[in-house]
Each structure stands twice: as C-alpha cells, then as structure tokens.
Length: 192
Image 1 (spheres, helix red, strand yellow):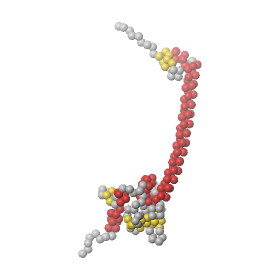
Image 2 (cartoon, one colour; image 1 turned 90 degrees about the vertical axis):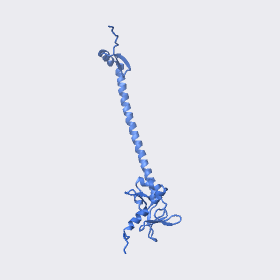
Image 3 (cartoon, rainbow, N blue to C red; image 1 turned 135 degrees about the vertical axis):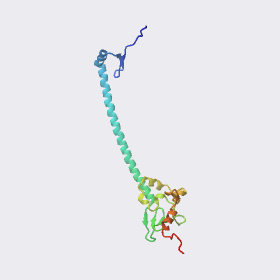
Image 4 (tube, one colour; image 1 turned 60 degrees about the vertical axis):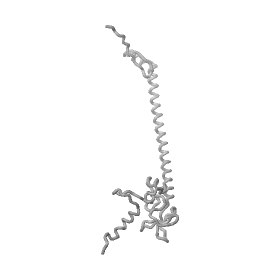
C-alpha cells in the first residue's frame, strides 16, 4: 500500500497575520515574542478606542434625535393651533340665539341640528365646510385623525352628505338619523 504525504497543520495568528507550526512550543515562543505582544496591545487599544467612539457617536445621535423630536413637537403644536384657528370657534350669537362660526360664516341651530349660511345662504344639514369645523367637532380638535380630516374640505358627495354604515349594514345619512330621532314623537298607528 502506498503512503500519502500528510502536511503538518499550521496555526494562524490573528494579531500578527502570520502562519506558524501548530505545536505548543512554536506557539509559546511566538506569543512571548515582542512583536506579538505589541500587536496584542495595539489590537486591545483599537478595540477600546472603537468602543469609546461608538459610545460618543451613539450619544451624539441620541442628542440629535431628541433635538429633532422636540422641534417636531413644537412644529406639530404650532400646526395644530393654526388648524384650530382656521376652523374657527362656535360662539353664541346674542341677536339670533344661534351658535355662530365667524371663520366659516355659518349659524347652527342646536334644536334642529341645521346650519344656516353658504352662498347663497340657506338652511342645510350638510354645510360646505371642513368636517372638523362642524358644531360639536370642536371639542375633538386635538386628535391627529381629526386634524387631518378637518384640514381637508368635504369633497366627495358621501362625506358631504354624512353617509355612514349602520350596524345592520344599511348606509344612512344625517337626515335619516334626524328623522329617526323625531319619529318617537309621531304616532305609530293611525287612530280612527
């Protein structure tokens, strides 16, 4: 039988980037050497410096993010305040007795739930104004969802009419709800 030549295993020193014989004596001699000890010290120093640099960078990023977040919060508060001012406030009009929104130029009758205003002025349940400016929506101006909804005008017909889906799956609008509320006052059956 023929014998195959088997090479001796070598050991790679990561610090010095060299190959050496893989036996305890060669390793011990190499690790005691001045060059190897300098390379180990240099590697440890680089690791400490990298850790310190990473910590400084992390702190700088944290400070920058806090600064950005605080500026964003300030800008959001300013935008929210501007949006609320653009919607206007409902105040009691002494002469008419109705609630009046000076910015939107609409009156609101709380007894019927109807609005008076527009061009030409008329009574309606669905005024042409932003959704957030409607009477009763003013108390919920602070939510972000209402801010987005209130800054856009009621464009599609469904949102102008106020169509919603009831629990039974039937689409209803505000006029139907108003009729249902007052239907309890009407007699259910004709009396002969």
